[in-house]
Image (cartoon, rainbow, N blue to C red; front, top):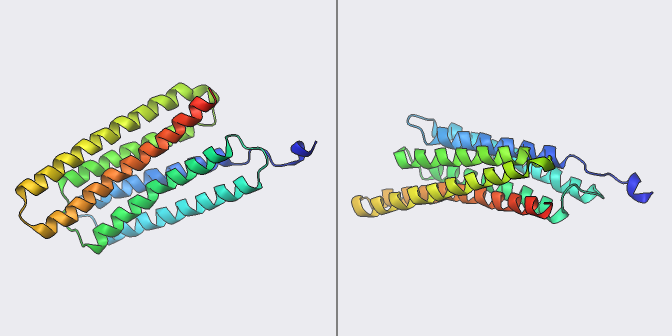
Length: 208
C-alpha cells in the first residue's frame, strides 16, 4: 500500500533525452567553432549556454531521484548515467574556453575532423539514450554503443597522428602548445561519450 502511494518512475527517461539533445547541440557548436571564419566568441558563448542548460537537467534528475521511491533503473545507474552525460558537455565547454582564452584563430583541418567525430558520437549517444525506455531495444542500444567505441578509436588515431605531425613538422612552440591542448580535449569529448556507452551497456546487460 505504501509503495503505491509513493512516486513511481517519474520523468527520468525524458530527462535523459533532454540532456542528450543538449549534447548534440554542443557537438554542433564544436563543429561550428572549428570551422573557418566562425565567430569564436559567439560559439564559445553558445556552448556555455548549452552546458548551463545541461547542468539544470542534471539537478532536476538528481532531485527527482531523491524524491522517487521506485525508479525504472537502479539508482546508482541513474546517477552515473546523467553525470557521465554531463561530463561530455563540461569538456565541450572547456574546449570552447581554451579556444577563446588562447585566442586560437587558426582552424586546423584536424580540429574540424575531431569536432566532426565528437558530433557523430553525440548523435549516437542521443540515439541510444532515446531507446533506453524500451526494453525491447537492447540489441540496437548495444550496436550504437559499439559505434561510439569505433568513433572514439578513430578520434584517438586522428589525434595521435596529428600530435606526431605537430612535433615533427612545426617549429612554433606556442602554436604546438595551443593545438596540442585543443586536439587532446576534442579527443577527450569522444572518450566521455565512450564512458556513457559503457554505462548504457551495463544497464542493458543488467536487465537482460
